Length: 129
Image (tube, rainbow, N blue to C red; front, side, top):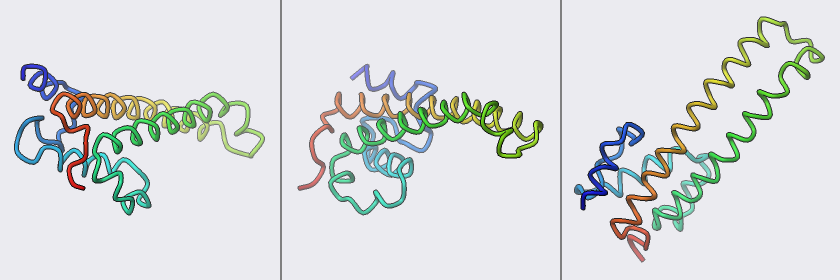
């Protein structure tokens, strides 16, 4: 499976997740993906039993977070002064949002790699019933 090996070598592959095809890699992927979601989602066994559903939900979650950060970034200069936020704090906030947007982009690429690896390895179905 050359495609799996190249996926594992990608710089966007999360270091907490074992290489696709290795023993227990899906379990490490599931744990990593679960950590991306709000804690309340850990109780939904449908997501943890079906890793591809977990990747889908993580992708959606990241898309929404990225959208929220973009809005915060785009509106900071217009809205924060009216709230009494100092200019230096606004600048730091803008930098923080820019860094967060980059981090979310990296996480989204990692989730896509895991999704692709699950589909290629046949992990798109359920692990347990």
